[in-house]
Image 1: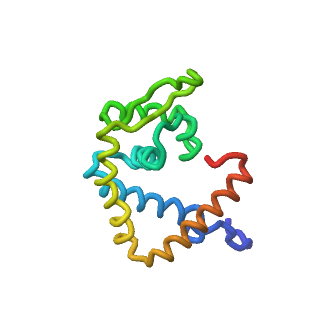
Image 2: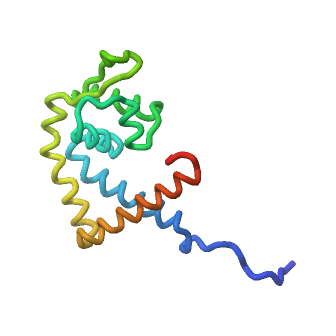
Length: 153
């Protein structure tokens, strides 16, 4: 039975969500390759970036910064702790809070991690200004989408 209605099914290649998804996969594959030298996964690298910016951060602050819940973050932090890169301790002001700090090995890893961003810039083969503009557009889009869904995840 043939329909006379025009095909209204959206095409995959016309979807913003697919462009973001497939770009995310490509980005994760690149980071997996670059981070292999540091023996870090991409989510672990993101946690380390937060801690390299500011030491002694609560688990809830890390989660808010990375848009991750504690159920996702806790096993990740345990693996970083087992690797000797971070230490977790109860807050002295509020023992319900767990504070995460870098160890000496975690601080030292920062030097080696400096090459990661350069590897990403080389692989993207774009002018830094173009990438910065794209980053800004994505952050704006994320903010708008989060405002419409009630959360960023």
